[in-house]
Image (cartoon, rainbow over all chains, first blue to last red):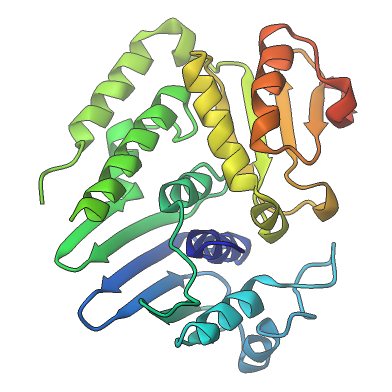
Length: 181
Length: 124
């Protein structure tokens, strides 16, 4: 995958597939410490220790429709190439946390890419769990919680055309303020 | 940090949507984009973005949703268009440059683009 935002979307979709009802996504860019940290926490079905090891094997997948599962191995390779690492903490029945780090200025670090598109693709998922999102760049933070969006919408779905247009503007604005700061 | 577009705005969006008869009921059109690892790697997110842009540009009301892998990875990005009373049509390998024609012919003229379709499912 060409950008980190695509890897993030893949992690979010894993949480959906794991049956999570809640996902926390934190993207933390520490410009001083030179570390970019991405963490996705879900309360899905989780994995035992053996499955965690298998999850990093490209020829393992829980899917029955195909025989390879490339998402996590590709991300682990991308992190290691860029002076970082990938960690998975998981317990059956409790959920999974995937944490991945990169050296910000490493020449092999992939660009962040279209995080707004990633958030939209997740939020428009028919089975999207609740999301608590925060993206910190230095001293600036953009965050939102889908619970608050749903409370304001009183039952109108996020996929509603008028809401979609609002979401595109809202996310674009939030992310661009970080880029400007 | 300046206060962003607020939730108050979103409440206004909801109130307007509820006032309008057209949008209070279902718009009748749903576009579904495959967003599993295979779809993502094949560019499905950008295809979805292109669909949202084109709908906004042409002021067409349609629900857009994403789904996981359905096992036809080689045909990703897969895009399904479902309209009330019409068969559901699945399009394969849809890249962003194909989106304007898809919207123009399928949604506006009501003629599915046969050469890109891989399947049809009767709505009955």
